[in-house]
Image (cartoon, rainbow, N blue to C red; front, side, top):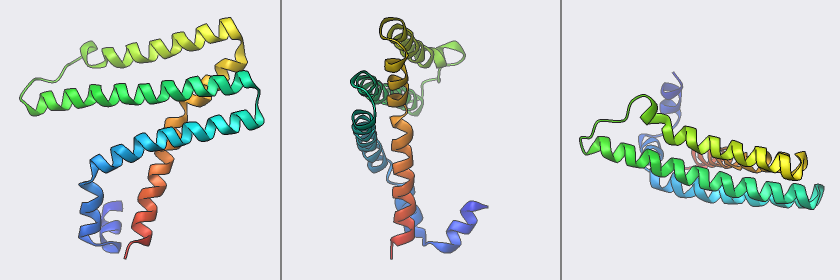
Length: 149
């Protein structure tokens, strides 16, 4: 129903430009991860301690690496399916995903045991930079729909 409402309020070319621009969205999302990470780090330096800011920095880097890793994994699966390969099933389908989050969890546990909770909370907040990036992209999409002629 939302699509019907949007279709009545915007032109077909606007809908097609949003749907057919995945590369532009991917580039903006990568850029937005960096922007939100830098913003989080600046806020951490302004309002937190150096250890907390270090944690936010580590989390921001992990967030970008996690996004890049997930993007490449998904891209290889989709390219394989496009070329006629059978997609992975069961544990094979989620193996890299599980490994990725186990690695991040191990980093959080290690930081908590070696440096305390302050660094761990910082890393966790830095990992949320992807959420900030997604919100920036949503605002970009909404503003492009509202303010296009």
